[in-house]
Length: 83
Image (cartoon, rainbow, N blue to C red; front, top):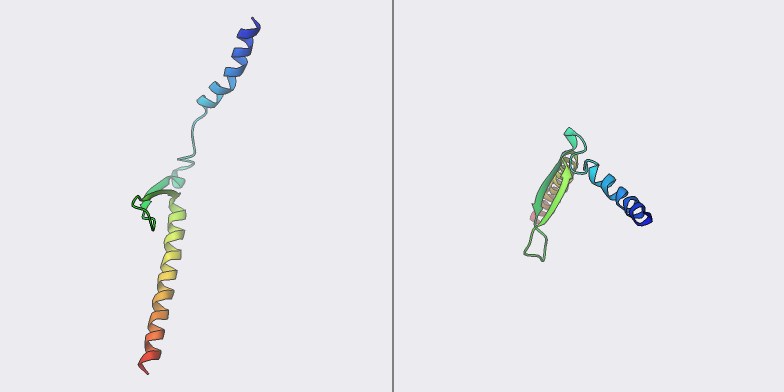
C-alpha cells in the first residue's frame, strides 16, 4: 500500500506537466515565432534562429542603419581622396 501511494505521488507531477499547453512557440497571435536559417562564418551548416516578427523588424532596421552608415563613410572617404 505504501509503495502504491509513493508511486502515485511521484507520477502526479509528471502528469500535471504533460497536460499544460505549450505556449512557448505561440504566445499570442502577433507574437508568433518566425524561424530563419542564417549562415555562420566558419561553418558549413546554417544556424536556425527563431524570433518574433517585432524582433526581426528591429534587427532589419539595425542592419539597414549600419549599412547606410558604412556606405556614407565610403563616399566621404572617396571624395577626400579625389581632391
